[in-house]
Image (cartoon, rainbow, N blue to C red; front, side, top):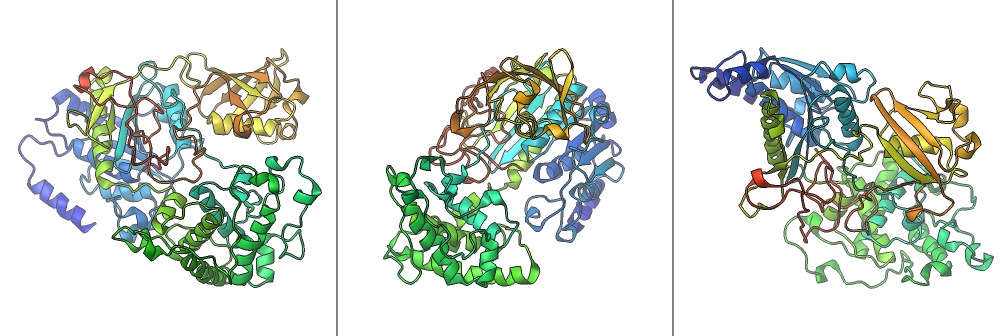
Length: 627
């Protein structure tokens, strides 16, 4: 904080003639009328992280006098290398509050209002948003982005959306009726790996990393029944198996088949050798007896802790120079690290209780790295360095302070156009991985027109979904379809049956008895129309149901008819729950899946059709973790 005070002292002493201290706006840089609009407008900044810190500083120095900032997060040590408004002494405090305090050091006369809260809180409704002239997003998750997008559309407010991912960045101006909204284009589908793939037939390193994180939780963390690490005897591929190949006793080391992994581990006092033998020898032997799984796959190789198979050592393989974390471990090293970290974690668990996996906890990271690599060896999958596994397990894309600074600057530039009444001149701006043919790193292009089929900003949002009315229950419709897919927060659903039957109510307790029942119980069938409404977002959507008894692709519970799939180009990856860090698209805020800023000619002539910027060296991901 000292350097901010020194900067402010120097800044005040060096203010040139013609500079307005109150408005902080250079009269020579901004026209008088625009400077006045900047001074008197009311701005909402959503997010006080990497972009948010840079943005607040820019707004204060540009002359904005009435700024509101909201963020639910608290400051962590890992934030300090790029979120420069925070210092070590602020760790644990509200980001919004500290960002306000630090930004005001640049200009103590500015009015900044901070909210340590979630933007999803019902208090921040359409009426709350309508008090602002501009909303600026500096968020890091899709749910909040969708929510702000809808509230701005409902209130008719201009929204400046932004995001960064490593060296990539994007800024988009959204105005109802003028440009695409955040949800006009389909996003890459979120990745969820089938449990049978994780437990029985992993084929990629990420599958083994997911399994290793599940193992950590089963042994030391918050155990989840959906994260079981034992072989899955209900694998769909085993349908029709006989007792001879499918009815083998599974947990040979567990005397009580009903005993959980945690209970069994505690009963043997977390003996490393026994745990190793169960997970990497006995369970694998069980899988080998399920012949149907290996008819078209290479079978796994059980690993016995006392008879480790010979393997090319790490020293025999060319290793990258530099960090120790980038060196590949041999199988023997993985076993030693597994045992050592398991002992340390079990001691910590017995002393402190349930643990939370943290990529920055060295012992926890060692455990996941070792367990994942041993499982990779078992299934003949390429083993990875600790650095690579940390990137995948933590969904990490390095946050670059310079990228945040550039994008924050672009946000302010676009906001000035909006205040000056020139919103039609605003651009969709990209910060790509490589400069375009004209050697430009900041690549703007024209705003795209709204998608007439968008289920959010269309005049009458309607969609058709295909599902099985006999098997899909009301809770699945509420949680998976309306909340997860369509981003609703508090949905109400009415059946268009001439009676106004309420299927789902946002009022607590009114329709809870409906949740476990299949849709067909309520007369919902092929052609039924459902009117849905989310009063928090001032958002209505009409659903037309197509009943289908056919199994949908990838075991999906429903299908959005007529939607561009939004699938990642690399179809080997199917979700974003856990994945490698290297992004495949230059689209950090998910505004496009296929169309990206064209690398051509002058930006004023660039059309709104963006093509993807390919980087063949980075082909193992399609989703980015955002600032």
